[in-house]
Image 1 (cartoon, rainbow, N blue to C red):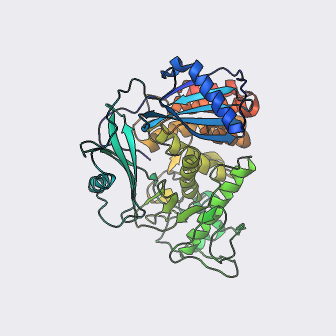
Image 2: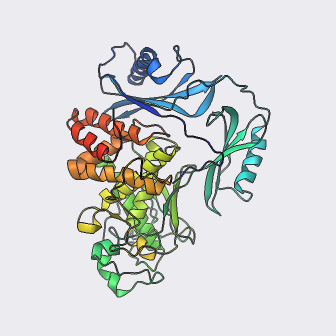
Length: 494
């Protein structure tokens, strides 16, 4: 979804560089400490490349994460100890602590500014509520953080995070901490334009029948062949649809002491089963690839939440909400898994999607994840089509599609400045990767690549991260093919 800013300005520069693969030998006591020391030493030796200060005094240590390919060390730029919004660096290292890739959101030449606020956090919350129209009950307590907002001229700001259920919304609002004026607002919702929820994956794709229609949630005879009986793994025993990776219980929840949840689409509880099964299945697949720390948590999901045709992931509370406009989104697995893709990326790179290209990569990845989870048994025009059932209410193509992964879009001339449209540039590259290297190899590379990124990463950063993932996982066996695929999309690599 787009992160829309009300103030005009440009996104911060994101610089990615391919770096030496020579390991740095350091004597550090622990694994994380050793990786962090190696990363700092590399940045100190190569600071000019990233426009850093020689002593790195304005870089604060962040989280160090392990992955299949090595370690990933985060640094946060600060002024007088106050973090600069979006100004993070991610240093990716191999298993021997050799630096593989640096993705930098560092903002050079920021002036020293007054970092003592004149207005209180509570005053900033009031301003943020007015700016967003969030005057009613909030879904969660507002969160405030003092930051440097540096899109354009730098300013000390309160970053206020607000979330509401009715109307559904979540925002970061930046309020000038000296003047009290609103600087910018940013929507946090990860959305798909449309609703739809499916079976495995949905009736149109399963039955190869593009003439099927919603018929106001009727369970009519033509849909009978689309139903599948599946195993719901590791329910918590409460009778609700709750397990280690999904909580699909909500008001009007399905509760079956027998643990047999046999509903049809005219019953809203059917959508809860859909959400549980497809999210649980996706997480188990991710773990089968070897990733034990990629969104390995209980995902809250609410079905039939609102009447309009939309769905979203809300990073402020980590929940997925599925709408019921058109075809109910909870009936289409592609929509469910797309939204789960936003949750996956937000877990790997908190705040991911804070620039146009990062947001576009997020939408493209969501479509790709839905595609790879439903590709088995699909062919022809259906293979690259996402959310066929959902799309029956708004697309007249055969088959109807929310979006396709085989559009021949090219960067930068096909950029439209809208994340779902521009996401088709990114998803086409991933689709070509999947076809060239096979499902397992491609899916591993895509998931591994996220560990190298920052919230404001560019298409070029994303492509370089996939190259780095291939070096880490496959000793660089696919470098030429990967470069060829991204070159065909107009995305340059180092």
